[in-house]
Amino acid sequence: MKKILFLSNYPRGYVLTSRCEYFARACKPFAESRIECRETSRRSTILHYISVIREYKPDLIYTMEGFSGEIVALLMKLFFRIPYIVDRANTNEDYFREFGYSYAYWKPIAIFENLLLRLASGVATRGINQTLAFKARYYNENIVHLSEGTDLENWKPLNGDALREKYKCSDALVLGVIGTAQWSDISGHYSGREMIEIIRLLPHRDIIAVNLPSMTSDEEALTRLEELAESYGVASKLRIIQGIPRLKVPEYLAMMDICVSTQLKSLSGEMRTTAKLPDYMACGKYVLSSTIGDARFYLPAKVLVSQDDDYYASLAAKVDQVFEDKAILATGLKYVEIAHQYFNYETISIKAASMISEIVLKK
Image 1 (tube, rainbow, N blue to C red):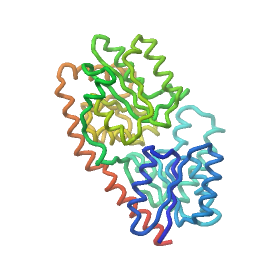
Image 2 (cartoon, helix red, strand yellow; image 1 turned 90 degrees about the horizontal axis):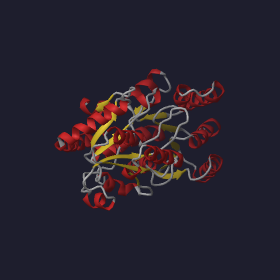
Image 3 (cartoon, rainbow, N blue to C red; image 1 turned 135 degrees about the vertical axis):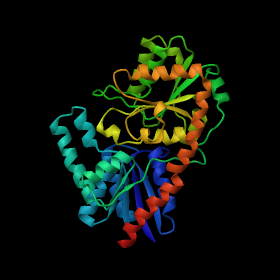
Image 4 (cartoon, helix red, strand yellow; image 1 turned 45 degrees about the horizontal axis):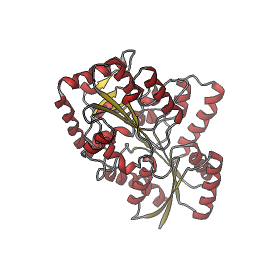
């Protein structure tokens, strides 16, 4: 029986660690698996990973984002010839270059990432555009598209009336965002801002904004969101609900009428299928999304908004249309079938297991 070591850059319970768990289960017919997560500093995590590898002696290392696992995987390949797979949504080089970081900062990262991707036994991509870009750059001959996914047994349309009552928004139109809230000094972006801007632009409408940040969210981003709402005089319309386990998130999605998905207007943003999109669609939510990234391949044009200078105003106009015809919200149920077709982790995991088996069994 072969041994596979999954190294996740996130704690247990996070969406990408769950991705490791799905893939590990799919590999059971030919391999046993172990999943290690980043819980502390990068230095401590690297030392821990090396210790685990010495004890476990894996036949393959599967890295789920993050320099900690990738550095260790590359070292193990160079010194002990242990093959590895890199699972990524984009490259850090693209992000840092686009947002003005110095050459001295991004160039070493670019060199590392190029070496990492070229020496990998396989590269798993999550976005359609990302797959095309990675193949065009000749990073690796074995590039496999393993899209973002969701657990369709738990992520499905539910009734959210009880939670709407609990959070005092039964009669309002509820806008919602889930996922990692991060602040960037250079881009000025933070998750949830679009909802507050919509409320500002529609003062005559009864709207509540619900932000459900993941466990890896940046407190500064949440603080800035609260400060923005306060500055607009709409703080009473913001609900930030923290500490919700991932398996409970569908219950909170059920209280939301419209879910918002905004990608950064950048090359790294263009490459992504944000992990929240499959969750929104599986739960049958009506979605408003920027045209950046893979959302435009899965959502109809009428819910896509160009991320230009009028982005917030365009979003607000589409939300205002919902007040004129609430039946529009029910069209989100059509996305459930699309989620089953493209984002079912049972199907994606089989494809991942095939990719992994071809490497470890050949070894």
